[in-house]
Length: 391
Image (cartoon, rainbow, N blue to C red; front, side, top):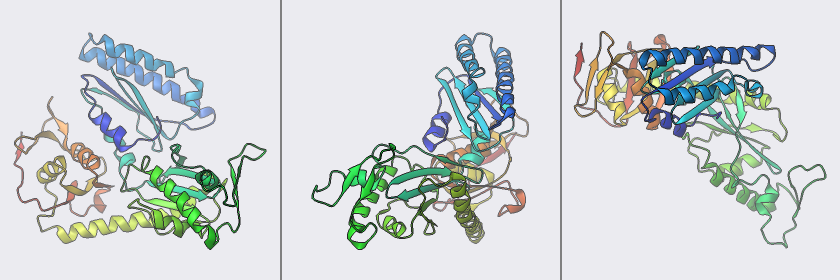
């Protein structure tokens, strides 16, 4: 596995298992330094075995799965194709791993649920973007972030070219559909490519792309940027159904473009957009701060997040409040001393907000809209406050 979607994250959250192993590690992407990767992973697996032995020496099933994870240690090709960080999730249901554009702190957790807090900077929507590179003979799709950009394989329902999209049209149309001698994608030959006479054909091509992307575009809050020659971009805007397509795109022919070049041009567009969006969200919180539509009371924010009332969540980077939440009584309990029932309440709020389509901003304390570790804008007014009990 490479990309971590909302569905993937939800499966990790809901994984029903008594013993879950979560492994995070930084990774070297290229060169001789990649030899460090399997060594670090081997040490983390040994640490996991020791932790399991401390908890219960009768967990033979999870030990068997852990032993199968050791096969990755000697897999040379696996370690040669890494990103900045690697996350492994292991339980008796199997092994899931994600190569991610984020350098994790090396750590391992063994508990009754997967430890997902280190993923929050990766999954939150305030640094990711999609890039759709459109050309009549080529369609490419990417997921990018501040750190990197990666091509995503498109579903078969999306035509690879204009020729493929129209190959079943009226045979009397002046179209030729063939594969070049070099085995490249089919080439479209017709009269007046890009002229008014061909806009309907291009529009149908783009409609097929738009429909097919619904299988891929799971993150509705993530901005989408177009790249293509100038006359194509407004045609795609006409047929687009994705709710966060940016007006500004990358102009020029993207066929065979260097992904690193596309990444830089896309980031030049997305960075000011994200910064504006963040400032607007903070301004909105400040306007609503003294109403029932926003709050910095942790007990109110936690209970609202759990039931899907949070529209926008602001969280201090690495903040932690340990305690419990009782869904039936809607009560938050803050623990001054951690016990076996303690959970990270900020992690709970962030996870629930993300899974229910809210926006999340992970900020430095100095950037927070209020002098607290957590604040929220609600989807609708929240009048009642949960009771906080400190033990």
